[in-house]
Image (cartoon, rainbow, N blue to C red; front, side):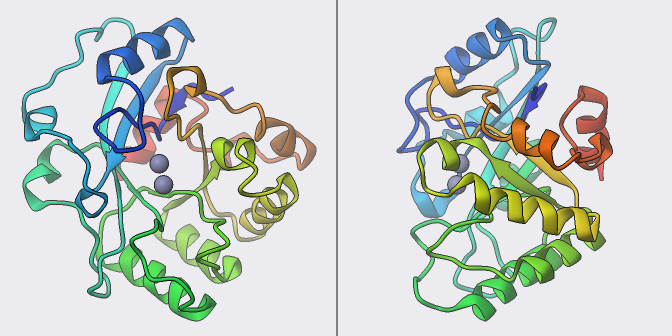
Length: 230
Ligand SMILES: [Zn+2]
Ligand SMILES: [Zn+2]
């Protein structure tokens, strides 16, 4: 079970349904130890006010650990991501993922290069939903490099739930991560309160493949904090 959900969206993102406080309240109700609010980076035109980063404090500090994060995008300039300089001091979790703003049909080599260059030039904790049919990747290259750089590849519950990827595809990626000793993170990518902490489509795969718990970075708060400190 995910203790620390590191990928969730609020209504600051164009695709999210609820407020930061509602997300926090449901995460507490569900018994999570930590939640990260990771609305989209500026290229996807979120409504996140700067005050979320520089003024907002978790009112439920005694009940749950709160991480401020952003799900960043690859910018047109190679090696650049859309994390605004002014928010860097306040951000605990930096996610990076391909979204519709990246041109399609570039091919596996170009998407893989884009990803490796971005990891090489920026502090990034997690590559979100690495399996995306619009943005194919050389997973052996990616997992090898991520293992070297201590970047986690995400096992995204929502993408299976929404039938955007199959459990078989997810299983293959886990096998590649095992081969290269690449850290993984289990995330809900919740856009609604009911999805918070949901890992029900990922856990059977981890059990089936006997994934050692030390390779999953967010099974306990302590491990999560250690990983994010890097
Ligand atoms: Zn995403
Ligand atoms: Zn997301």
